[in-house]
Image (cartoon, rainbow, N blue to C red):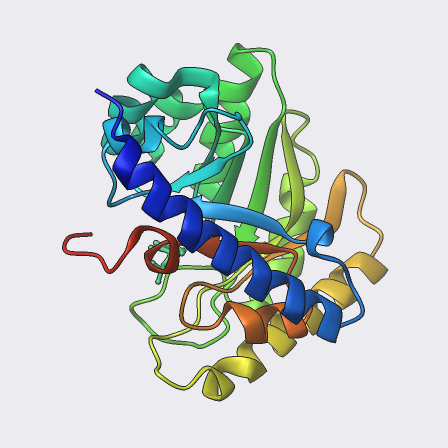
Length: 237
Ligand SMILES: *Cc1c(COP(=O)(O)O)cnc(C)c1O
C-alpha cells in the first residue's frame, strides 16, 4: 500500500533540497533547472517510493541491480531510473531496457557488455564515465590518465553514448575539503571536450551527494545524487 504520511515528510525534504540546489546554482550563475536531481532511493522500499511518484517527475538512483529490479517491478515507468553503483558485467542484461542512464561506466569489459546488450535491444544507452579523482583505492573509477584512451575506444561503440563524467568524493564532514575533487573533474571534462571525439559528449558532470552537493554545484556539477538528505539517514546500504 502507498504510504502517504511518508510521502508528506519526503516532499518537505525534497523542497528543502531543491531550495539548496537553487541557491548553489545561482551562486555559480546558473538556474535550479540546470541541475538534475537524482534522488538516491537505494534505502527505500517500492511502497514508500510509490507515494511520491504521483507526478511522474522523479528520477531515482539505485546502486544494486537486484533492488532496482524489485522496485521496477512495482513502479515501472512512474519514474525514471538511473544506475549509480558498481555494475557487474553479468547483470547488464537485466537493466539495459530499464534505466535511462548508467553513471558508473568504469572499465572496458563493462563497456563491451553494455554495447552488446544495448545493440540486442536496439537502443542507445546513455552512460557517464566514473573517474577516480581522489585516488582512494576503495573508490572505483578510471584513473584520469587512462580516461582519454578509454573514451577513444568507447567512441567506436554505436549503442553506447558517453554523455559526461561522474565522480564520488571520499566521506567527509567538511565539504570544503573535497572541493578540489569537483574542480579537477570539471577541468578534466573541459580537456576531454577539447579533444572533440566523435560520439563522446561532455554534457554532464554527475558529482555531489548529501554531504557535498552545494560545493559540487558551485564547481560545475549538473547532476547531483542525493539520498539521505531526502529519505533520511541510512540504516543499511
Ligand atoms: C548512496 C549514494 C549516493 C547518495 O549518498 P547520500 O549521502 O545518501 O546522499 C550518491 N551516489 C552514489 C554512487 C551512492 O551510492
